Image (cartoon, rainbow, N blue to C red):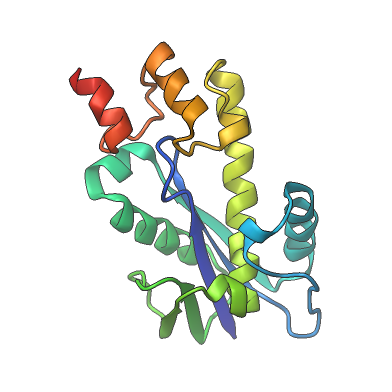
Length: 186
């Protein structure tokens, strides 16, 4: 029983970092799995629905902006992965994690750099995490009009930085990240 884990949102300056874990069903292969960033939003949505239907097990974990500020982004990412893994109801024999760092979980495994491109379970996790975080950015967009969170997904784009300067820092912003921190110091 193999699980794959990936996270999204490390480079954002607002919102949580979100991780997903997926245990695919070897009897129900899913065509088109790859790094979520290589897919259109529509294709990600379609694949996410198929993953949720076909996988043996899956879960989403997160770490909030306040936890990112307190722990740092790497430790918060690992915490989100640990929280996702803890929700699995399937007993996993091995876990493959995208990147270089392995979370503190009670399961043998290894890290795979660019695993979202080469390991189906990690690709599936990448897709579920991205869809979950993008959906959350759409909710934040409605809660905080003017920031255009649905458009830039929380990344420090030119528009986001302009709106941040104009409208100020929200409680959802990561106050330890340089573009936000600078505004709080000024």
